[in-house]
Image 1 (cartoon, rainbow, N blue to C red):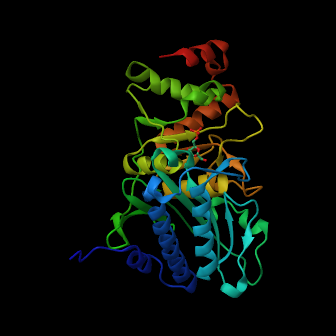
Image 2: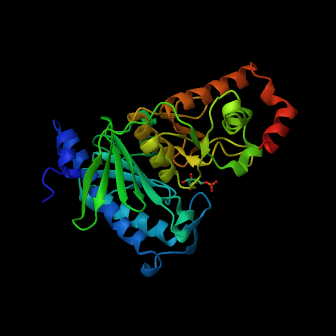
Image 3: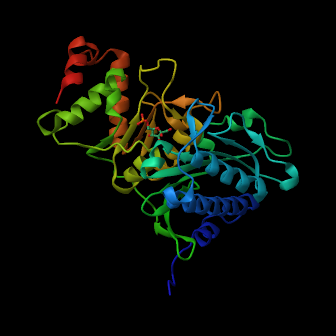
Length: 355
Ligand code: F6P
């Protein structure tokens, strides 16, 4: 029965062979899979598990923590602390990076993660996920904060879990992007989506449109053109989706194409964006780019950014290559003054009230 199915472990043994670092990376991803199974079991209990609702605490971003945020964070920390493969970790839910006691292992890697992304969806039973990014730890000494502040292009591995109708784990070690579905009865992740490819073109976009009045003109232009549909410059009708869970949004894009935007906006001008570079934008961009898509701030490639701090925010435009390149072009047009239409008060008015 089930002969010929490729488990995550078998897949990793095949993809990561040749050096001790590669085998340790395979072992680390297997540890992460075990952690994801534990979080999947907790999330799937819903109201029956006493895991829903908020706590009195807030995280470093000032966001109220959900019980499942904290439980998932503990699951990841325990996994990395006991596995002996990680020298230090940084999490959305922890202010500063934590060194792992070297007595627990030699630790070649640094793990950066968002233990439960989209947690506003937990209490309403909509898909959430976990995101992780793996960097190389310094050799022969304890990691410092600077060791984490590396551009996303240096990630050794990245991925996410989606806790949806099925639990899936989607990973890349720089050799394509591959999806595994949890067979709950057997407890194994099985390769179900090898070599995922994001179509270069799409007619679907995802953005929180309630922020439209705060967007910059290039984003207003792009969305206005999509909404104007087939009788306008795009010459086709577009569809829109917004789940408010980056993992679910990116997963949909990997499955059928699309573009996800959380751009810089003027709602709070002190913030460069809403999403966090190191444990949201970087790993998700690596996953999308390894599937042939693109990740950009609108003005630069996400994976080229040299981070200033662990919890840094960044504008994110992610998905089908031709759409992301078009949005980058709109930013260039705007910044160079080549496109005056979208700086005029008339456009602002049109865009706010169109359709
Ligand atoms: O913290 C990140 C996040 O929950 C993403 O998963 C999601 O894309 C976004 O925030 C939702 O933002 P909003 O509440 O503005 O819809």
